[in-house]
Length: 382
Image 1 (cartoon, rainbow, N blue to C red):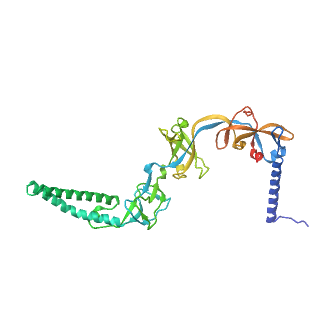
Image 2: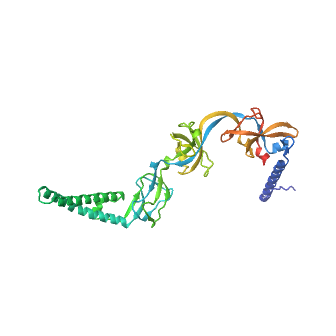
Image 3: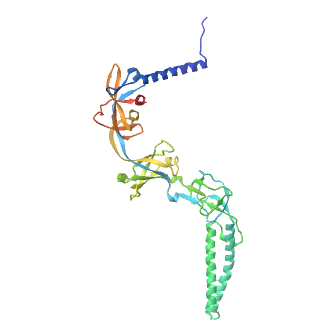
């Protein structure tokens, strides 16, 4: 009788884990067997190690590299596209429905503020409005009497002074009401309101929100802030020694170190005309594409590289460049025999870089024909 044996799912998992363990131990053993000859300073990798660790050897190749100037700065918006919302009088927040991140349009209601001071201003305005008609009539009467030599100049000047003073107060209170978005004509008709609404002066996104219902606010308090994020740009500082290399429309490559490793692009738009501060820097203004603006926030710190030129250079993969004791190095193949590959650690000067390649400056030991370990360097220096 013939039996067909099919392993269970649990057994399959055990077989898989066993296989992984063997591979891991094998790789670990390979790394342990790597020998550094202290007599000649060479690192020897056996043929089996070279194969199992999937190492690769290649010569440097000529490639184009960007010559860049380093800059730092932040994401910002033009002054006309940022607004801090305050009130002209003290009071209490009556209503507020906005949250940070909400979009608002120009003229949209933001918060409502209730205050007894609002009522007092309207009351004073009504009183002055009622007085002004009488004072105007009295002034005109005294002027007529004075012209006809019936009354004294003193009475005439007193009536004129009272009328003009009331007229000034009337215009002042009227402007206050307009600033508070209260209709003076309605107030003169006796329609007094107890609260005012603050409206958005620009379209944009709410970036700061300090308003809670019932909270007390003073004229100096910033209730909320709005930024038009469609106008975000770069504000950078470039050192004096580099500023003459900066030109309009040069490409800007920048990252936001605290938020992401992603690299973004921009263009130089304006260059400062003066050197300022103890650090001897000048301002450089950069523009962003619309798709980039959507990923960024005002106030973010950025580190940038402004591309000022291009050049040819010896390029190797970034994985081929090691770093030890504050120095960059490569592993140069010195010889190969039955025992394996023999590498020498050679210090090099690092130049420009791209996302995948790094430039190394040629020296007496490294040239276009040098054979370098381009994959597996980190396995040898751990």
